[in-house]
Image 1 (tube, rainbow, N blue to C red):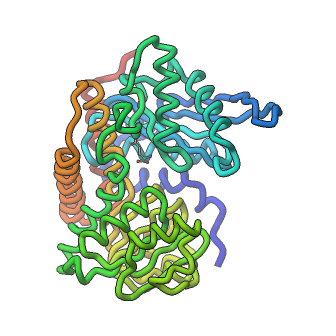
Image 2 (image 1 turned 30 degrees about the vertical axis):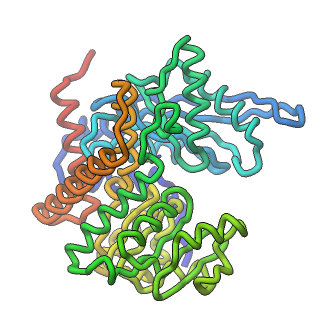
Length: 419
Ligand code: GLU
């Protein structure tokens, strides 16, 4: 079965969910227009000299979807298929995500169309510094705070922080989060998204009366999000029975030894042919019967073409937008309990908030404090969303959007419009 083209446009997915929630909230048309529209969209063309002396021009975006509840907040993605609609969708998801966990940020996202796997570190540094310089009046601790996303990492954040600071003539570490700890990064930030996924999964398992030790988990993605989630979930006692990556999948019904799998991947460059498991087909692996499925790789993994094949009790969305809007009703029919992305993967931006607070105070917390506060926020938000869903008889995703839209709309109403 093929998937209609529009189904794969993340902006369609974001707007479809927005419309459902806005309708359920009975939001007036004017407020819907305000909440739908990004506050600001910047497109830049970045000329960069490649290592071989050739000149190349890369296109970059930074979109501030909302600045109503605080500075725009959200990652920067480096990938060959970045598009304006994708960044728009991701920026709006950041607004709803920050509102769901009730942290004082709006939402934003950036992207550069480039392939970080074929660019050298020096080339990536030049792209990042020029991108930052072009956005010097757009980003800032009070206005818009970037972070890592797909294809970017701590080093990228260090370059952004340094470039911004050079322009301002003093160190401004609160301009980005996800920095190395030595440059003002927060302890626990690298694990934060995975830890958040683990926390909400434990909460969902409680609802199902499944003990962590009995839970069979399938994780798709072994990057920072999927890798940390698999590691922390298996540490919490869950059995990671299947791990799926872009180049293959491995299975062990007794649970994979994740630390050993990480070592195997480090040595061989891939998760396949792991001594502690058997190779399985990566497409079929998504349909493994399990208690929890964690799609933590990319967008549009669960679509109208395959949603009926998913045999999980719980889906915990590690990636942004792994499920298309057309897949939602199919999963609902199968009675699958979804922990939607804007709740499930909010651990990353929550610790980014802690990082921003620490940078602005110049006072740094130990890892235990970070993890305790993260747990408080994730558990409270999970309970908020699930009880809202039960009370209003809607699914968890719609509940999360309703809660978020309502919070942002309320802020806009209270502030009033400056005209
Ligand atoms: N890129 C991550 C996300 O999509 C983190 C954003 C942040 O920490 O600002 O949630």
